[in-house]
Length: 450
Image (cartoon, rainbow, N blue to C red; front, top):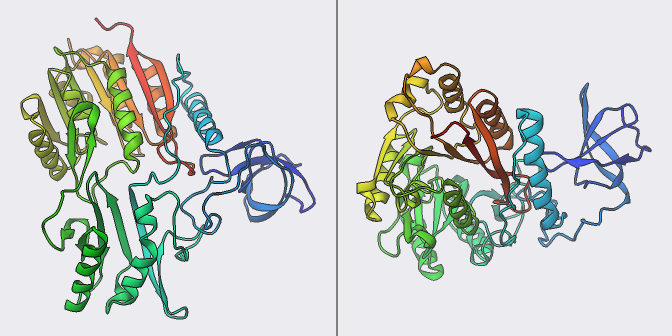
């Protein structure tokens, strides 16, 4: 058990952004707010047999990378965990987290470490889900992120990671909801910034009164935003009023415009997404005569840029509705003839399914946090037992974009140790500055590819 008088040396950060130390008994102590190299005394809030969770009680030796947080709500608001850590050190730590995960979980070491992708550290968050809470005792409505380790909504009037026009809108939004009849039945506002417009999605648990609808319209006219309404699940989202610029993001390097709905999954950080797509395609190096498969294709974020370079691209996603949207995006960008899309459950896929979709020169894999285990396992099975698909040739290169270093490492272990691939390169992507989230990109190649 860690004693209150004991000084602990912080060794590293974990994937949750907590400092990691060991007490005199050798037990791991996770310390909220502590940085590598610091010496701290702690207050333990939770004890288990093998670890303890604590907060800083005293700081004796401060990290040279500790900085003053830019946001006045840091520490209370749970939206950011690392504003007290220099952004350059954040990136280095995420790169190390990727390397450690690949080695310790997958026993894989990339032949080449790529320079991390990083960009603006402030005003980058083009999508966010804001909680709304009417606090009768305070006589006000709160609009913002949850407090750290709490279900309470932080009392905030600005946010440094939101674009300035959204940050400036937090207090007016709170005042708007406070003035509405339905203030107690509107728990959430989702925001999405496009290239030409900003959309606000109001979750309302009961039908809005005519007066409330008019207040929303007046706010939209004053602020230049679109209101979307969500009375039930995500499928019920719809525009309050038609007209105005469409919600879209652009990939200028490829001359593409990607329409999306405010509740669609799109990258939070549009600037970094552009760099990520560009790097992924350079690594993929699709040629005019090649066929490429884009697994977990979403709205076509990678599929459509690949189609500007390759002969043919097949995008595969888990939802029929999403596949239909991908087709629409391909058509709108003049790429329907070079693309095709199919829907299937990518978490249940066998070697025979790979054969059904046909051989491809290269793959792009961009799974959710759960990773692409079934896909990697099917590859490993085909490599281990070619009789499962005589004559079938696996892709000579796979570019894998990951939002979870643990599942990337697991899948990399399969591809390298059982699938016949080399881990040619890997690098971190700082998609979410000031958070512990680690995005990354890796390249796998086959030596026996013809």
